[in-house]
Length: 226
Length: 102
Image (cartoon, rainbow over all chains, first blue to last red; front, side, top):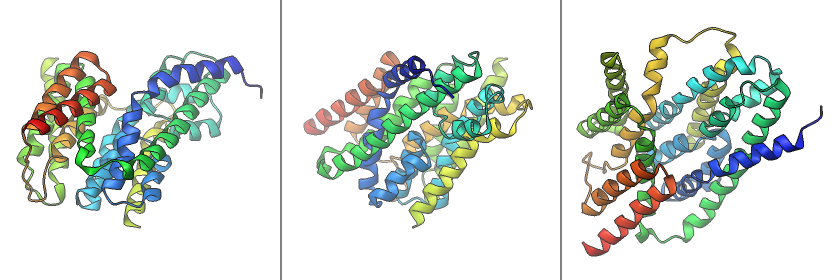
């Protein structure tokens, strides 16, 4: 199997600009692991076992804030449920790939990798494979290195800086940047509002109640609009 | 150990959500209502998470003026620039300045 070097360079070149916004996430994850009192290596293992910033940060911050383990796991899984859409969207493209590419491709399917891959879904199978795997590998290596860097930087940063507050700020940014349609705004507002009202629930169960209320409200808003 | 198991469970779940259709689905379509609902997972969960991270040990949501100001500015910057780094810098900058003033 020969690999087209220019295509690999193209994939890396497309991936790096998309990785830059993930750098603060990676660093904050490192800081959050330290802040949560989680063993650094165990915390860092989430980078290759989960390989998804929002879910990693959700799990780590919730565990660190004393949530029930099962609530933290559920919340992290719900955060990552959006990948089902990506998987479904790329499934036809992957039908033309070998089995090992499908297994590995699923592991590498980040938001950014998806965004790049859909643009290449009409490429011939060999070109798609080269581009997809080179892009996925770029994100994978960058992610492992930057989250490890966050762990190294974490203990050095004084607690008075209040850098843990960076986590809710980053999540707020993710919400606002993703609001491209009015029903999504409804989902976000109801999700936040119901979580606030349910704040007294034990084991931070309010998060899940709020999340499901938000999903239901968004779906309803979409229905009413049609 | 518990933490590692939690990471492992989320890792397996994440892999299944990413690889599930690629591995299993031939050309079976996802029901339309499920696709509609899936779009709202990210905004609903992430917004709920912002609030959940502000809940203190007693179950109350206690944020001071610095946090509120930081959220407001970060929200506006995110809306206008769609840039995570600028959002983070603006939010943390306002947080630090407001905290020094209060």
